[in-house]
Amino acid sequence: MDLDFHLKFLFIDRRITIPVRWLQYAIIALVAVAAVAAAYWGSMKIMLAVAGAIIGITGLLILLRFPNAGFLLLFAGGMFVPFRGPGGFNASILTLILMIGLWFMDMFVVKREFSFVKSAPIRPASLMLIVCVIAFAMGQIPWFVFANQAPLDAQIGGFAIYFFLILAMIMTANVIREIRWLKIIVWTFIGLGVVYVLGRSLELEIVDRIYAHGVYANSMFWMWMVTLPLSQAIYNNHLSFRSKAVLYGIVALTFYVALVQQNDWKSGWVPAGLVAAVLVGWKFRKVVPFTIPFVLAVAAYLAQELIATDDYSWGTRVDAWLVVLDIARVSPIIGLGFSNYYWYAQIFTIRGYHIRFNSHSQFVDIIAQTGVLGLFFFLWILFEVGRLAYRLMNQLPEGFAKAYSYGIFASVFGSLMAAFLVDWLLPFAYNIGLDGVRASVLPWIFFGGLISIEQIYLANQKTDPASSRERRLLPTR
Image (cartoon, rainbow, N blue to C red; front, side):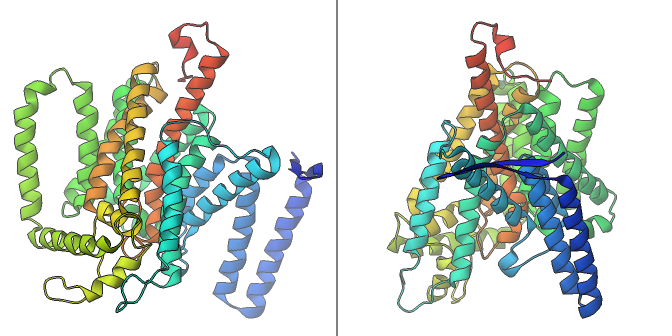
């Protein structure tokens, strides 16, 4: 099958056809060049660079033909491609930028119309992008005379993390237009993730070498490995008993690794545990009021135990929050720019030391880098995502989409907990960093998937307004 492109730009309007045979010849030629280069120079770096170019070109061709396949490449690249460039630049962030670039090209060149889908979470997300741009510009101001600013590459890296992750949600909402593709994306992630979880449960060291550290060392991987299968197992009534049993098994296995094998790492199981509690509690919400005293007692006990077992870390975190917030007072509205507070911190004292440090809190990081405006829009995004999920939970028919909405609703609570613990949703350049984007991209993609469900639902309503409620809603099989 040939690849057809319809190029429309200004006075240019023509259709371009690339025969598949040409592509095959091109790939063969590139392989030959790679072999010659490797044989001549004998350098592994040269070989890897040429191989990366071949893979990149192949991926680009796939994206041009099947844009939604980019999400699968994003997962695969983030999990399995160990490449780390300057500052932690990796295949995941590269694929994300490429997907966003192709999406913009489609709007500007092909459709010649710049527009986003209309949905409540899109507005605060768009405003957050504007705040990020302004904060980056403000970050070039030397706020403290006796301290160095962050290097420009660190500022660009911090800006890219915020900007492209939030834009990932908007892009996903506009690109995914079929429930079929959202299902493929969800089940692909679960399938790739369960291989790692199974390997870890069996204590197979090889899985840590195959999977990238930035994935399994990120709270978001564990939270979504609970959120997606558990929500489908509880609320998707179209699944067979056997399928639900498998999904419950995946959740149990995930908690075994996160809660038993790596219990000391709170970010691995606390957000996931909160998501599970919300999903189960909502299912049995009629009896929840009778369990409130017990739930509060358990929550108080767990909170006390968590603080007691990590008392020093908790105390230093509180001290760090206070110092960083004190630094941010010089520009409270729009922040100090990206990565700057890390360098300003050394002119302040924390427990008697003049050192550079990060806050280990998503909320404090956002205030320091983008001000209270950034925090306001960040919380507004989560609020609108939660509200949209709640609305769809009550409007959609039984099936995948309804269960997915339940999962997103619960994930908002887990995301808030993860943001409280560490900067898992929008990594800080000097903490989780660009390498963390491998898993930190997950909530933004799945939030965008919820907006796609809303758009498909609205489209079905417009095309079949006279049908019954069950038939005019989303296709669920």
